Length: 333
Ligand code: UDP
Ligand code: MG
Image 1 (tube, rainbow, N blue to C red):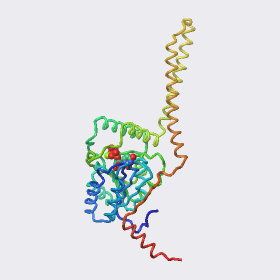
Image 2 (spheres, helix red, strand yellow; image 1 turned 90 degrees about the vertical axis):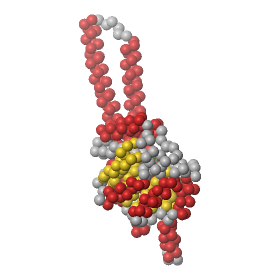
Image 3 (cartoon, protein in one colour; image 1 turned 30 degrees about the vertical axis):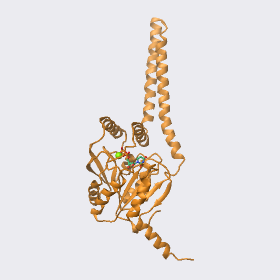
Image 4 (cartoon, helix red, strand yellow; image 1 turned 120 degrees about the vertical axis):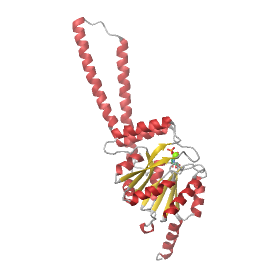
């Protein structure tokens, strides 16, 4: 484990990033101003998620100049969800804030999150007041997704218009880190953990620089991830669909028997048979696909691979100094 608890700062900021050379320095500047004003020890854990640009070099430079910067360099790109988990694994603070690096989550909101934590809430999440810089389509699909999740999520209620930007107390982080599933639908995992939670409204800004790594295909997959990680409803739908079709077939069959007895058999058309066969074939393939979705996920979990691999972990400079001191004072045999 990275560090002894007695050296822990009050706040840890966890920041996953992937190809963000344009914004890192700007982000750190704004973060440092905000955190400095809070007047308590803090650290920032940057997780470089296999960036192909100069992000890592910039981070190393930042760390050299600032005593409270830690860098976790993953062995390749693992995706934001896992990068975030890696950051949480290495965060030591009594309260941990997760934020994006692109300044869409303004660091200026952090003091409000901290205020909520001081009031005694374990989770203080930032909820978007408006979704600026996003297209109407993205807003509509996001809204549809939340509505769907609200209906099928059952006991686990996922707050609307809430991303990953949030503060968590140490015990909430520790609870979250117990969930080591490969398919990490973080919005769901955050909600699953529970604990007293509070929302803080904020205005989500458009990206400061660089481009989003999201596209609709990825968002669709994220939605699938959310549904399949938190409910087996699609499997039940398959059951009821099958039942409904079977009941219909029995009634339809009965009607044919009655009509044949009463009116003789006029040989009903080939097109209707074709339509029924194709329809049922389609439904069957689709339900197989649904089962496959779940089976694939079971397969991935069963392999029990580590969530990520760290290429390099550069702790905060004071931590490094302490470690060296420990090494010096260690009894030699
Ligand atoms: N990110 C990451 N790994 C990835 C993709 C993104 O660590 O594979 C980071 C990215 O650098 C940013 C955050 O996740 O800090 C959010 O990404 P982005 O802004 O592209 O997503 P959006 O805000 O559009 O949802
Ligand atoms: Mg963004």
